[in-house]
Length: 520
Image 1 (spheres, rainbow, N blue to C red):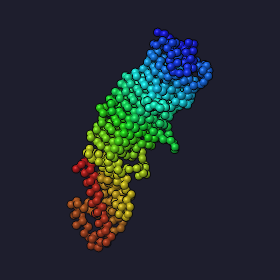
Image 2 (image 1 turned 180 degrees about the vertical axis):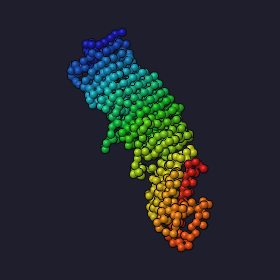
Image 3 (image 1 turned 120 degrees about the horizontal axis):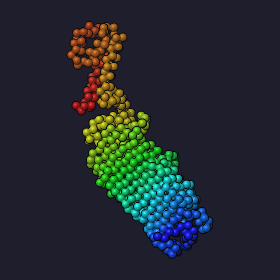
Image 4 (image 1 turned 45 degrees about the horizontal axis):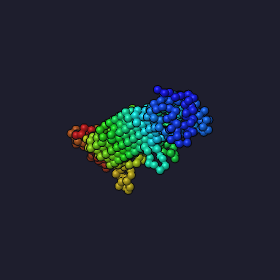
Protein backbone atom coordinates (compact mmCIF):
# COMPACT_ATOMS: atom_id res chain seq x y z
CA UNK A 1 0.00 0.00 0.00
CA UNK A 2 1.31 3.41 -0.98
CA UNK A 3 1.94 5.79 1.93
CA UNK A 4 2.16 9.56 1.56
CA UNK A 5 3.46 11.80 4.34
CA UNK A 6 6.14 14.36 5.22
CA UNK A 7 7.40 16.88 2.67
CA UNK A 8 5.65 15.15 -0.19
CA UNK A 9 2.30 15.56 1.51
CA UNK A 10 3.12 19.15 2.49
CA UNK A 11 3.65 20.01 -1.18
CA UNK A 12 0.54 18.06 -2.25
CA UNK A 13 -1.67 19.95 0.20
CA UNK A 14 -0.21 23.31 -0.82
CA UNK A 15 -0.98 22.59 -4.47
CA UNK A 16 -4.53 21.38 -3.73
CA UNK A 17 -5.27 24.53 -1.71
CA UNK A 18 -4.06 26.71 -4.59
CA UNK A 19 -6.10 24.93 -7.28
CA UNK A 20 -8.67 27.21 -8.83
CA UNK A 21 -11.46 24.62 -9.20
CA UNK A 22 -12.44 21.35 -7.48
CA UNK A 23 -11.95 19.46 -10.78
CA UNK A 24 -8.38 20.71 -11.04
CA UNK A 25 -7.69 19.64 -7.45
CA UNK A 26 -9.29 16.25 -8.03
CA UNK A 27 -7.21 15.56 -11.14
CA UNK A 28 -4.02 16.54 -9.31
CA UNK A 29 -4.86 14.17 -6.42
CA UNK A 30 -5.42 11.28 -8.82
CA UNK A 31 -1.99 11.81 -10.38
CA UNK A 32 -0.11 12.16 -7.09
CA UNK A 33 -1.83 9.56 -4.87
CA UNK A 34 -3.19 6.24 -6.04
CA UNK A 35 -6.63 5.12 -4.94
CA UNK A 36 -6.31 3.06 -1.76
CA UNK A 37 -3.18 4.89 -0.60
CA UNK A 38 -2.63 5.80 3.04
CA UNK A 39 -2.15 9.52 3.64
CA UNK A 40 -0.62 10.39 7.02
CA UNK A 41 -1.05 14.02 8.06
CA UNK A 42 0.84 13.59 11.35
CA UNK A 43 3.93 15.58 10.30
CA UNK A 44 2.19 18.35 8.36
CA UNK A 45 3.24 21.85 9.44
CA UNK A 46 -0.08 23.65 9.31
CA UNK A 47 1.34 27.06 10.18
CA UNK A 48 3.87 26.73 7.36
CA UNK A 49 1.06 25.70 5.04
CA UNK A 50 -0.85 28.88 5.91
CA UNK A 51 2.27 30.90 5.27
CA UNK A 52 2.85 29.21 1.90
CA UNK A 53 -0.65 29.96 0.60
CA UNK A 54 -0.73 33.43 2.16
CA UNK A 55 -3.93 33.13 4.26
CA UNK A 56 -5.04 31.99 7.70
CA UNK A 57 -8.02 29.95 6.54
CA UNK A 58 -7.41 26.49 5.11
CA UNK A 59 -10.27 25.80 2.70
CA UNK A 60 -9.75 22.54 0.86
CA UNK A 61 -11.86 22.22 -2.30
CA UNK A 62 -14.73 19.73 -2.24
CA UNK A 63 -13.24 16.71 -4.00
CA UNK A 64 -13.54 12.94 -3.97
CA UNK A 65 -10.77 11.29 -1.93
CA UNK A 66 -11.70 7.82 -3.17
CA UNK A 67 -10.71 4.86 -1.04
CA UNK A 68 -7.61 6.56 0.33
CA UNK A 69 -7.19 6.30 4.12
CA UNK A 70 -6.63 9.65 5.83
CA UNK A 71 -4.96 9.68 9.23
CA UNK A 72 -4.58 12.85 11.32
CA UNK A 73 -2.51 11.83 14.34
CA UNK A 74 -1.85 14.53 16.98
CA UNK A 75 -2.16 17.31 14.41
CA UNK A 76 -2.18 20.86 15.75
CA UNK A 77 -4.12 22.96 13.26
CA UNK A 78 -3.64 26.22 15.18
CA UNK A 79 -5.92 29.24 14.82
CA UNK A 80 -7.96 29.86 11.71
CA UNK A 81 -10.82 28.25 9.81
CA UNK A 82 -10.34 24.72 8.46
CA UNK A 83 -12.71 23.46 5.76
CA UNK A 84 -12.16 19.81 4.90
CA UNK A 85 -15.22 18.69 2.99
CA UNK A 86 -15.45 16.03 0.33
CA UNK A 87 -16.40 12.46 -0.46
CA UNK A 88 -14.44 9.87 1.53
CA UNK A 89 -14.79 6.18 0.66
CA UNK A 90 -11.82 5.23 2.80
CA UNK A 91 -11.44 5.63 6.56
CA UNK A 92 -10.92 9.13 7.96
CA UNK A 93 -9.27 9.09 11.39
CA UNK A 94 -8.53 12.06 13.67
CA UNK A 95 -6.53 10.99 16.72
CA UNK A 96 -5.81 13.57 19.46
CA UNK A 97 -5.95 16.46 16.99
CA UNK A 98 -6.15 20.06 18.23
CA UNK A 99 -7.98 22.99 16.69
CA UNK A 100 -7.65 26.62 17.80
CA UNK A 101 -9.92 29.60 17.22
CA UNK A 102 -12.04 29.45 14.11
CA UNK A 103 -14.45 27.11 12.39
CA UNK A 104 -13.88 23.45 11.52
CA UNK A 105 -16.20 22.42 8.69
CA UNK A 106 -17.03 19.02 7.21
CA UNK A 107 -20.28 20.41 5.76
CA UNK A 108 -21.74 18.35 2.92
CA UNK A 109 -19.17 15.57 3.26
CA UNK A 110 -19.83 11.86 2.78
CA UNK A 111 -17.97 9.40 5.01
CA UNK A 112 -17.74 5.63 4.89
CA UNK A 113 -15.78 5.25 8.14
CA UNK A 114 -15.21 8.31 10.32
CA UNK A 115 -13.35 8.32 13.63
CA UNK A 116 -12.61 11.40 15.69
CA UNK A 117 -11.03 10.41 18.99
CA UNK A 118 -9.62 12.57 21.75
CA UNK A 119 -9.77 15.83 19.80
CA UNK A 120 -9.66 19.17 21.57
CA UNK A 121 -10.71 22.70 20.65
CA UNK A 122 -9.93 26.15 21.99
CA UNK A 123 -11.19 29.65 21.31
CA UNK A 124 -14.40 30.80 19.67
CA UNK A 125 -15.88 29.24 16.56
CA UNK A 126 -17.96 26.34 15.27
CA UNK A 127 -17.68 22.67 14.40
CA UNK A 128 -19.89 22.01 11.39
CA UNK A 129 -21.12 18.68 10.04
CA UNK A 130 -24.04 20.36 8.26
CA UNK A 131 -25.51 18.07 5.62
CA UNK A 132 -22.83 15.43 6.21
CA UNK A 133 -23.60 11.77 5.54
CA UNK A 134 -22.17 8.83 7.49
CA UNK A 135 -22.69 5.58 5.60
CA UNK A 136 -20.92 3.14 7.90
CA UNK A 137 -19.37 3.19 11.36
CA UNK A 138 -18.84 6.60 12.91
CA UNK A 139 -17.23 7.31 16.28
CA UNK A 140 -16.85 10.89 17.47
CA UNK A 141 -15.27 11.26 20.89
CA UNK A 142 -14.38 14.87 21.68
CA UNK A 143 -12.10 15.31 24.65
CA UNK A 144 -12.71 19.06 24.98
CA UNK A 145 -15.02 21.02 22.68
CA UNK A 146 -14.11 24.30 24.37
CA UNK A 147 -16.52 27.12 23.53
CA UNK A 148 -17.31 25.83 20.06
CA UNK A 149 -20.85 25.57 18.72
CA UNK A 150 -21.61 22.16 17.23
CA UNK A 151 -23.97 21.59 14.32
CA UNK A 152 -25.34 18.57 12.43
CA UNK A 153 -28.09 20.73 10.90
CA UNK A 154 -28.97 20.85 7.17
CA UNK A 155 -26.49 22.46 4.83
CA UNK A 156 -27.66 25.53 2.96
CA UNK A 157 -26.50 26.25 -0.58
CA UNK A 158 -27.77 29.18 -2.65
CA UNK A 159 -30.38 28.09 -5.16
CA UNK A 160 -30.56 24.52 -3.80
CA UNK A 161 -32.81 22.69 -1.36
CA UNK A 162 -31.42 22.15 2.12
CA UNK A 163 -29.53 18.87 2.52
CA UNK A 164 -30.06 17.24 5.91
CA UNK A 165 -27.48 15.29 7.87
CA UNK A 166 -27.78 11.48 7.61
CA UNK A 167 -26.31 8.81 9.90
CA UNK A 168 -26.70 5.20 8.82
CA UNK A 169 -24.93 1.90 9.20
CA UNK A 170 -24.37 -0.40 12.18
CA UNK A 171 -23.09 2.21 14.65
CA UNK A 172 -22.95 5.94 15.38
CA UNK A 173 -21.37 6.85 18.73
CA UNK A 174 -20.97 10.47 19.74
CA UNK A 175 -19.47 11.68 23.02
CA UNK A 176 -18.43 15.03 24.51
CA UNK A 177 -16.21 14.66 27.57
CA UNK A 178 -15.84 18.40 28.27
CA UNK A 179 -17.34 21.56 26.80
CA UNK A 180 -18.29 25.11 27.76
CA UNK A 181 -20.08 25.74 24.48
CA UNK A 182 -23.73 26.72 24.54
CA UNK A 183 -25.18 25.42 21.27
CA UNK A 184 -25.70 21.98 19.69
CA UNK A 185 -27.98 21.30 16.72
CA UNK A 186 -29.12 18.06 15.08
CA UNK A 187 -32.08 19.77 13.41
CA UNK A 188 -33.77 17.63 10.73
CA UNK A 189 -31.07 14.95 10.98
CA UNK A 190 -31.93 11.38 9.95
CA UNK A 191 -30.49 8.85 12.40
CA UNK A 192 -30.83 5.42 10.84
CA UNK A 193 -28.23 3.23 12.57
CA UNK A 194 -28.34 -0.03 14.48
CA UNK A 195 -26.74 1.28 17.66
CA UNK A 196 -26.97 5.01 18.40
CA UNK A 197 -25.28 6.63 21.40
CA UNK A 198 -25.30 10.38 22.01
CA UNK A 199 -23.42 11.24 25.20
CA UNK A 200 -23.51 14.92 26.22
CA UNK A 201 -22.50 14.41 29.86
CA UNK A 202 -19.44 16.66 29.51
CA UNK A 203 -21.36 19.54 27.93
CA UNK A 204 -22.02 21.49 31.12
CA UNK A 205 -22.97 24.90 29.73
CA UNK A 206 -25.63 24.21 27.11
CA UNK A 207 -28.22 26.86 26.37
CA UNK A 208 -29.71 25.94 22.99
CA UNK A 209 -30.10 22.31 21.88
CA UNK A 210 -32.13 21.61 18.76
CA UNK A 211 -33.43 18.20 17.58
CA UNK A 212 -36.43 19.65 15.71
CA UNK A 213 -37.89 17.40 12.98
CA UNK A 214 -35.31 14.68 13.49
CA UNK A 215 -36.07 11.19 12.14
CA UNK A 216 -34.95 8.34 14.40
CA UNK A 217 -34.88 4.87 12.82
CA UNK A 218 -32.31 3.14 15.00
CA UNK A 219 -32.70 -0.14 16.80
CA UNK A 220 -31.22 1.07 20.07
CA UNK A 221 -31.09 4.77 21.02
CA UNK A 222 -29.43 6.09 24.17
CA UNK A 223 -29.16 9.84 24.81
CA UNK A 224 -27.10 10.52 27.92
CA UNK A 225 -26.43 13.64 30.01
CA UNK A 226 -28.41 16.14 27.94
CA UNK A 227 -28.67 19.07 30.33
CA UNK A 228 -29.24 22.81 29.97
CA UNK A 229 -26.56 24.14 32.30
CA UNK A 230 -26.44 27.77 31.18
CA UNK A 231 -28.39 30.17 33.47
CA UNK A 232 -31.51 31.57 31.80
CA UNK A 233 -30.89 35.32 31.96
CA UNK A 234 -33.20 38.13 30.90
CA UNK A 235 -33.13 38.45 27.14
CA UNK A 236 -32.04 34.84 26.59
CA UNK A 237 -34.10 31.68 26.37
CA UNK A 238 -32.67 28.29 27.18
CA UNK A 239 -34.30 25.50 25.23
CA UNK A 240 -34.04 21.84 24.35
CA UNK A 241 -36.28 21.11 21.36
CA UNK A 242 -37.51 17.79 20.02
CA UNK A 243 -40.49 19.39 18.28
CA UNK A 244 -41.93 17.17 15.51
CA UNK A 245 -39.27 14.50 16.13
CA UNK A 246 -40.21 10.98 15.03
CA UNK A 247 -39.10 7.97 17.12
CA UNK A 248 -41.77 5.55 15.86
CA UNK A 249 -39.34 3.02 14.34
CA UNK A 250 -36.96 2.93 17.33
CA UNK A 251 -36.81 -0.42 19.15
CA UNK A 252 -35.48 0.91 22.45
CA UNK A 253 -35.34 4.57 23.52
CA UNK A 254 -33.69 5.85 26.67
CA UNK A 255 -32.94 9.40 27.78
CA UNK A 256 -30.69 9.30 30.83
CA UNK A 257 -29.85 12.38 32.92
CA UNK A 258 -32.17 14.92 31.29
CA UNK A 259 -31.89 18.12 33.30
CA UNK A 260 -31.66 21.89 33.33
CA UNK A 261 -30.80 24.81 35.56
CA UNK A 262 -33.72 26.65 33.98
CA UNK A 263 -35.38 26.83 30.60
CA UNK A 264 -37.70 24.86 28.36
CA UNK A 265 -37.69 21.22 27.24
CA UNK A 266 -40.07 20.90 24.33
CA UNK A 267 -41.30 17.57 22.92
CA UNK A 268 -44.35 19.07 21.20
CA UNK A 269 -45.96 16.96 18.43
CA UNK A 270 -43.29 14.29 18.96
CA UNK A 271 -44.09 10.71 17.93
CA UNK A 272 -42.58 8.12 20.27
CA UNK A 273 -41.80 4.42 19.57
CA UNK A 274 -44.65 2.11 18.64
CA UNK A 275 -43.23 -1.23 19.79
CA UNK A 276 -40.72 -0.22 22.43
CA UNK A 277 -40.32 1.10 25.96
CA UNK A 278 -39.50 4.79 26.21
CA UNK A 279 -37.50 5.55 29.35
CA UNK A 280 -37.09 9.18 30.41
CA UNK A 281 -34.77 9.53 33.39
CA UNK A 282 -34.38 13.06 34.74
CA UNK A 283 -31.66 14.54 36.92
CA UNK A 284 -32.06 18.04 38.38
CA UNK A 285 -34.84 20.22 36.98
CA UNK A 286 -34.91 23.91 37.85
CA UNK A 287 -37.59 26.50 37.06
CA UNK A 288 -39.05 26.12 33.61
CA UNK A 289 -41.21 23.69 31.72
CA UNK A 290 -41.10 20.21 30.20
CA UNK A 291 -43.70 20.14 27.43
CA UNK A 292 -45.16 17.13 25.60
CA UNK A 293 -47.92 19.09 23.85
CA UNK A 294 -49.98 16.83 21.55
CA UNK A 295 -47.28 14.17 21.63
CA UNK A 296 -48.16 10.63 20.56
CA UNK A 297 -47.19 7.65 22.76
CA UNK A 298 -48.19 4.34 21.14
CA UNK A 299 -45.88 2.29 23.39
CA UNK A 300 -44.90 2.16 27.06
CA UNK A 301 -43.64 5.37 28.70
CA UNK A 302 -41.70 5.30 31.97
CA UNK A 303 -40.71 8.44 33.89
CA UNK A 304 -38.09 8.36 36.63
CA UNK A 305 -35.84 10.82 38.41
CA UNK A 306 -32.57 10.68 40.30
CA UNK A 307 -33.06 9.90 44.00
CA UNK A 308 -33.51 13.00 46.14
CA UNK A 309 -34.36 15.30 43.21
CA UNK A 310 -37.65 17.16 42.80
CA UNK A 311 -39.42 17.73 39.47
CA UNK A 312 -39.39 21.52 39.90
CA UNK A 313 -40.28 22.29 36.28
CA UNK A 314 -43.88 22.31 35.11
CA UNK A 315 -44.67 19.08 33.26
CA UNK A 316 -47.34 19.30 30.56
CA UNK A 317 -48.92 16.53 28.47
CA UNK A 318 -51.73 18.79 27.29
CA UNK A 319 -53.54 17.21 24.34
CA UNK A 320 -51.31 14.11 24.20
CA UNK A 321 -52.48 10.59 23.31
CA UNK A 322 -51.33 7.49 25.20
CA UNK A 323 -52.05 4.14 23.58
CA UNK A 324 -49.70 2.36 25.97
CA UNK A 325 -49.37 2.67 29.76
CA UNK A 326 -47.75 5.69 31.44
CA UNK A 327 -45.71 5.21 34.61
CA UNK A 328 -44.85 8.32 36.64
CA UNK A 329 -45.13 6.65 40.05
CA UNK A 330 -42.88 7.76 42.89
CA UNK A 331 -42.04 11.18 41.44
CA UNK A 332 -42.04 14.33 43.56
CA UNK A 333 -43.49 17.20 41.56
CA UNK A 334 -43.37 20.89 42.28
CA UNK A 335 -46.11 22.25 40.00
CA UNK A 336 -48.94 19.82 39.32
CA UNK A 337 -48.46 17.89 36.03
CA UNK A 338 -50.80 19.10 33.31
CA UNK A 339 -52.81 16.15 31.94
CA UNK A 340 -55.70 18.29 30.67
CA UNK A 341 -57.02 17.08 27.34
CA UNK A 342 -55.07 13.81 27.41
CA UNK A 343 -56.41 10.49 26.16
CA UNK A 344 -55.45 7.21 27.85
CA UNK A 345 -56.25 3.84 26.31
CA UNK A 346 -54.37 1.86 28.97
CA UNK A 347 -53.26 2.17 32.56
CA UNK A 348 -51.85 5.32 34.17
CA UNK A 349 -49.68 4.59 37.22
CA UNK A 350 -49.69 7.40 39.81
CA UNK A 351 -48.52 5.43 42.85
CA UNK A 352 -46.76 7.54 45.52
CA UNK A 353 -46.89 10.69 43.39
CA UNK A 354 -46.45 13.96 45.33
CA UNK A 355 -47.42 17.49 44.32
CA UNK A 356 -46.17 20.83 45.62
CA UNK A 357 -42.76 19.60 46.78
CA UNK A 358 -40.50 22.49 47.83
CA UNK A 359 -43.24 25.01 46.97
CA UNK A 360 -44.50 27.66 49.37
CA UNK A 361 -48.21 28.34 49.86
CA UNK A 362 -47.81 31.55 47.87
CA UNK A 363 -46.21 29.71 44.95
CA UNK A 364 -49.03 27.18 44.95
CA UNK A 365 -51.61 29.98 44.92
CA UNK A 366 -49.87 31.62 41.97
CA UNK A 367 -49.40 28.44 39.92
CA UNK A 368 -51.27 28.83 36.60
CA UNK A 369 -54.27 26.49 36.09
CA UNK A 370 -53.51 24.51 39.25
CA UNK A 371 -57.20 23.86 39.94
CA UNK A 372 -57.92 22.50 36.45
CA UNK A 373 -54.81 20.30 36.51
CA UNK A 374 -55.75 18.83 39.90
CA UNK A 375 -59.29 18.19 38.70
CA UNK A 376 -58.01 16.18 35.72
CA UNK A 377 -55.67 14.08 37.87
CA UNK A 378 -58.55 13.48 40.29
CA UNK A 379 -60.64 12.15 37.39
CA UNK A 380 -57.84 9.81 36.33
CA UNK A 381 -57.25 8.64 39.91
CA UNK A 382 -60.94 7.84 40.32
CA UNK A 383 -60.88 5.88 37.07
CA UNK A 384 -57.90 3.92 38.45
CA UNK A 385 -59.72 3.32 41.77
CA UNK A 386 -56.97 5.25 43.54
CA UNK A 387 -59.19 6.77 46.21
CA UNK A 388 -56.35 8.20 48.29
CA UNK A 389 -54.90 10.20 45.40
CA UNK A 390 -58.37 11.37 44.39
CA UNK A 391 -58.93 12.71 47.92
CA UNK A 392 -55.53 14.41 47.91
CA UNK A 393 -56.25 16.10 44.58
CA UNK A 394 -59.68 17.18 45.80
CA UNK A 395 -58.16 18.72 48.93
CA UNK A 396 -55.48 20.56 46.93
CA UNK A 397 -58.10 21.79 44.47
CA UNK A 398 -60.24 23.15 47.33
CA UNK A 399 -57.25 24.94 48.85
CA UNK A 400 -56.35 26.50 45.49
CA UNK A 401 -59.90 27.76 44.85
CA UNK A 402 -60.41 29.13 48.36
CA UNK A 403 -61.09 32.87 48.72
CA UNK A 404 -61.21 33.40 44.96
CA UNK A 405 -64.99 33.80 44.85
CA UNK A 406 -66.53 37.22 45.18
CA UNK A 407 -69.32 38.38 47.46
CA UNK A 408 -70.40 37.68 51.03
CA UNK A 409 -71.73 34.24 50.15
CA UNK A 410 -68.42 33.23 48.64
CA UNK A 411 -66.53 34.48 51.68
CA UNK A 412 -68.75 32.52 54.07
CA UNK A 413 -68.45 29.37 51.97
CA UNK A 414 -64.67 29.71 51.84
CA UNK A 415 -64.54 30.28 55.61
CA UNK A 416 -66.49 27.06 56.10
CA UNK A 417 -64.07 25.37 53.71
CA UNK A 418 -61.13 26.58 55.84
CA UNK A 419 -62.79 25.17 58.97
CA UNK A 420 -63.33 21.87 57.15
CA UNK A 421 -59.61 21.69 56.35
CA UNK A 422 -58.48 22.62 59.87
CA UNK A 423 -60.73 20.09 61.56
CA UNK A 424 -60.29 17.06 59.29
CA UNK A 425 -58.01 17.87 56.33
CA UNK A 426 -61.01 17.53 54.04
CA UNK A 427 -62.12 14.22 55.52
CA UNK A 428 -58.72 12.57 55.15
CA UNK A 429 -57.77 12.60 58.84
CA UNK A 430 -59.16 10.60 61.75
CA UNK A 431 -56.81 11.99 64.39
CA UNK A 432 -57.61 15.68 63.77
CA UNK A 433 -61.34 15.55 64.59
CA UNK A 434 -60.58 13.28 67.57
CA UNK A 435 -58.16 15.86 68.94
CA UNK A 436 -60.67 18.65 68.34
CA UNK A 437 -63.34 16.59 70.13
CA UNK A 438 -61.08 16.16 73.16
CA UNK A 439 -60.27 19.88 73.05
CA UNK A 440 -64.02 20.65 72.90
CA UNK A 441 -64.71 18.48 75.95
CA UNK A 442 -61.85 20.01 77.98
CA UNK A 443 -62.44 23.58 76.77
CA UNK A 444 -66.13 23.66 77.57
CA UNK A 445 -65.41 21.90 80.87
CA UNK A 446 -63.11 24.78 81.89
CA UNK A 447 -65.74 27.33 80.85
CA UNK A 448 -68.38 25.57 82.96
CA UNK A 449 -65.99 25.44 85.91
CA UNK A 450 -65.06 29.12 86.03
CA UNK A 451 -68.32 30.68 84.81
CA UNK A 452 -71.07 28.60 86.42
CA UNK A 453 -70.67 27.94 90.16
CA UNK A 454 -73.72 25.70 90.23
CA UNK A 455 -71.93 22.94 88.28
CA UNK A 456 -70.08 20.73 90.75
CA UNK A 457 -68.40 18.40 88.21
CA UNK A 458 -67.77 20.54 85.11
CA UNK A 459 -65.66 17.98 83.18
CA UNK A 460 -68.26 15.28 83.73
CA UNK A 461 -70.98 17.71 82.71
CA UNK A 462 -69.02 18.62 79.55
CA UNK A 463 -68.54 14.91 78.80
CA UNK A 464 -72.28 14.37 78.89
CA UNK A 465 -72.81 17.05 76.21
CA UNK A 466 -69.80 16.05 74.12
CA UNK A 467 -70.96 12.43 73.77
CA UNK A 468 -74.74 12.77 73.95
CA UNK A 469 -75.33 9.42 72.20
CA UNK A 470 -73.79 7.39 75.04
CA UNK A 471 -76.35 5.84 77.47
CA UNK A 472 -74.28 6.95 80.47
CA UNK A 473 -74.39 10.54 79.24
CA UNK A 474 -78.19 10.40 79.12
CA UNK A 475 -78.37 9.13 82.69
CA UNK A 476 -76.01 11.88 83.87
CA UNK A 477 -78.14 14.56 82.24
CA UNK A 478 -81.37 13.12 83.63
CA UNK A 479 -80.35 12.38 87.22
CA UNK A 480 -76.95 13.80 88.11
CA UNK A 481 -77.45 17.37 86.88
CA UNK A 482 -81.20 17.86 87.42
CA UNK A 483 -80.62 20.54 90.04
CA UNK A 484 -78.46 22.59 87.66
CA UNK A 485 -81.37 23.30 85.33
CA UNK A 486 -83.72 24.52 88.05
CA UNK A 487 -82.08 27.98 88.10
CA UNK A 488 -80.00 27.78 84.89
CA UNK A 489 -78.96 30.97 83.13
CA UNK A 490 -79.77 31.45 79.40
CA UNK A 491 -76.02 31.55 78.64
CA UNK A 492 -75.69 27.97 79.88
CA UNK A 493 -78.33 26.75 77.44
CA UNK A 494 -76.55 28.57 74.62
CA UNK A 495 -73.20 26.99 75.50
CA UNK A 496 -74.71 23.52 75.77
CA UNK A 497 -76.39 23.91 72.39
CA UNK A 498 -73.15 25.10 70.78
CA UNK A 499 -71.19 22.27 72.35
CA UNK A 500 -73.72 19.72 71.18
CA UNK A 501 -73.59 20.99 67.58
CA UNK A 502 -69.79 21.08 67.55
CA UNK A 503 -69.58 17.59 69.04
CA UNK A 504 -72.00 16.14 66.48
CA UNK A 505 -70.05 17.75 63.61
CA UNK A 506 -66.74 16.41 64.90
CA UNK A 507 -68.15 12.92 65.45
CA UNK A 508 -69.43 13.02 61.87
CA UNK A 509 -65.94 14.01 60.65
CA UNK A 510 -64.41 11.09 62.57
CA UNK A 511 -66.81 8.76 60.81
CA UNK A 512 -66.00 10.41 57.47
CA UNK A 513 -62.30 9.87 58.14
CA UNK A 514 -62.87 6.15 58.81
CA UNK A 515 -65.01 5.89 55.70
CA UNK A 516 -62.39 7.52 53.48
CA UNK A 517 -59.49 5.64 55.05
CA UNK A 518 -61.00 2.17 54.78
CA UNK A 519 -63.51 2.75 51.97
CA UNK A 520 -66.39 1.61 54.17
